[in-house]
Image (cartoon, rainbow, N blue to C red; front, top):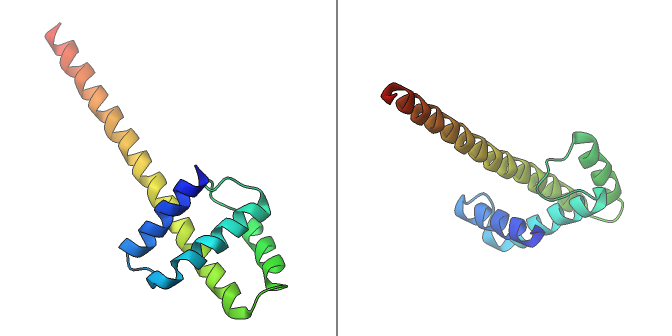
Length: 110
């Protein structure tokens, strides 16, 4: 499942032209590294504290530009996840409204 989420994220970055395509694998790697570091599922949003802890650790062994790239990657990943959740939430609302409409129509026929 995690690989699928990362593949979808890569596709999202490419389709939205958010990142030059040659950098997309690095963005996915930084996201994967952060989530592995905090031992969290890729489908969950991270807290600011979790990200800060990762960046402190990450900065010890990486160049400043890599840390900035990782920050950008996680910001885009948060946006990506939020968009998916908003879409799922909206789909749930639409299903609920449709069911209420159907129930109201059925009551009128009685």
